[in-house]
Amino acid sequence: MDAFSLLRTLGALLLVLGMLVCALWAVKRYDLTLPRKWLERIGTTGPQRRLQVVERLAIDQRRSVVLLRRDDTEFSVLIGPEGVTVLDSAAVQAGAPEVAQPREAEPEAPVARTEDAPPSFAERIPVLPDIWFTQEPARPELH
Image (cartoon, rainbow, N blue to C red; front, side):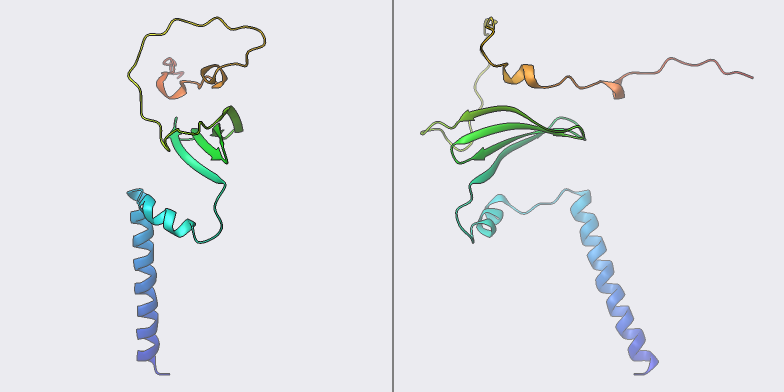
């Protein structure tokens, strides 16, 4: 193998690796994903799946709430650096659509909790610190 063939082979390898790095950068930078229809077609090659991610909502950069469906039960799960916390679980109604449509806001009267009732979904979400919005007091410079 002469030097020109070796140089051409290494150049082609570097070109392919460079294109791969550029493609991965674009996917990460612009958060590119496959359309849901393609992903469903890819995932249905085996037996019927029992676990499904219905919806995901990012609370901040490190925490998110995920709505999971297993068989006929939905679970609301808080995922964060502290771990995974199950917030709520409920049975799926027989005639319920796949994704619930948002309702118009209606004023509701506060409901008094009884001791035997489990805490509501809103009461289970931990309060997140507002660290990034607070400003530290200015420190006097020591000379």
